[in-house]
Image (cartoon, rainbow, N blue to C red; front, side):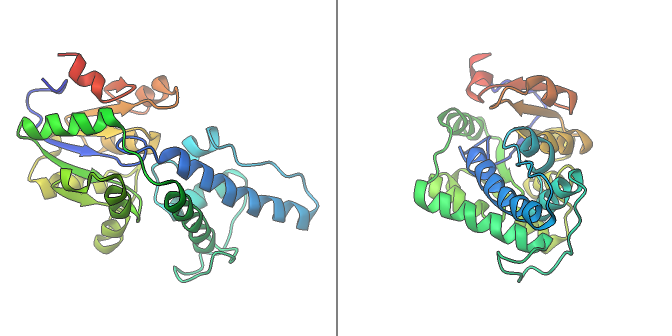
Length: 247
């Protein structure tokens, strides 16, 4: 009835782009941060400024990854290396942590000003999952996951949350490593083969495939269905409501 294999008894949902309409907010914040850094660097070195692409660069290098990993991965694609710095670095510091802090400041401002809207189809699907007796967890790289869930009014729908804060506390590697999804299944008392992963990010789909989960559902919000499949999605839908409609 849920469009899932019969043996699945736990569901693990990514946050941004799957449950909430915040992927575009994150992409815009990444672009604003990276463009500011890249423009200043180009002016200082007398080189051409090539802006951050909020679609291709976002999907390939930062979407779904922990914040600092996103900074490192994108900068490496441009041949740029920065000192790591420390988590206490201010937004103006030209370090990996400083750029990450700058991005987080921007995204929190956008969320505060614009609010958070959940996807109605996803909320309906989670309600159906719970009604069927399956347990649910949110698995997100975001350190702001709890605040976003609360702002969207959906925090009470989930039995567990494994986010950037939990990952740091427990020493879990970020996506595309499967650690956070494996922890989500463990907390729900399910084996990976008994759990379904729902992801819109390429790195997240890779994590689901690497963890040996029962099914990996790719959620295509931006027209990348084939890329989601090639990275490991078993099923690709545009909205989770399609899984209910397939009954």
